[in-house]
Image (cartoon, rainbow, N blue to C red):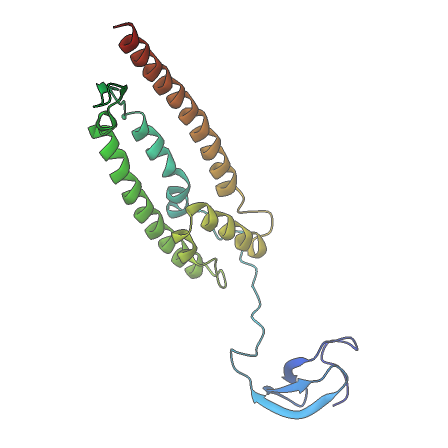
Length: 206
């Protein structure tokens, strides 16, 4: 009863009782103490079990979470504001803010809410699929409420632990999606600013 549970440098804590593993005994860092506790989920260490190499770590749900932002990029291209100039009561010429609110604008806003909700649903289904495939405590789907990217990264970390050498493709796809989104958004913004400057120049010359 004086031997450390996992070596002489084992820190203090609850460990399976050497004489009766069905209960926990407190190790004070030097020796076993008389303090006992039931071997419950609260004290038992939760180990991650490696899954078989034949167990898939990808599914349509995670790919949907990763690729859905591309839909927003495509819909952004449908938003083409027609800038109109108006004259204020003070006689100044400025852009009519209502010219921004085209059907494409409202479509983009509505799609953002829908995509967010679908991403959360897909994260939930992916979390459940991983659990059924034997992944112990997969990354929780609720992190997707914070950001789909957070869920994808966290999921990858867990999958790499239970399936060494696999599970990185969603992160690479996420990076590719982000880079493509930045390129398309930059081109779209450049075209919009050019249209704005052209309209301003036309109004001034008129």
